[in-house]
Amino acid sequence: MATKVFDRDTLLDLTVNFIPLFILLFFLVGYFVYNPFKLGSTERILQYMLLATPFVLLAILTYLSGKAIASTEKSSPVYMPGAATVDGAEPIEDEHEE
Image 1 (cartoon, rainbow, N blue to C red):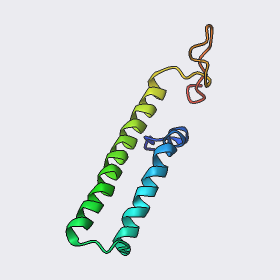
Image 2 (tube, rainbow, N blue to C red):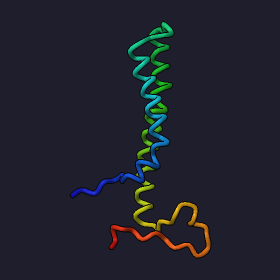
Image 3 (tube, rainbow, N blue to C red):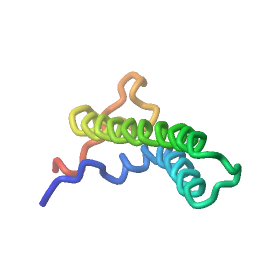
Image 4 (tube, helix red, strand yellow):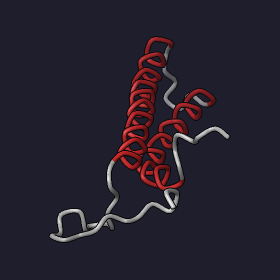
């Protein structure tokens, strides 16, 4: 069975990036279907570039940060939230190692 790159916890961490991606995608599709500002072709190309560029860059950033989160969780000890800096904190045992 193939190992999943993003588990449930990693996807929950990345939802802060999914929301802006969906907003940008909504406006990309909306402006493609309807031209509310009656822009010419040059202005529409600029409009799409101003929406598509952040969409692509945020999608790349989301993927790379997801890979970083997933690889760090596999190679480093995992602590309870807020306990990594507490003296004497013990890492959480991974249920997959048992």
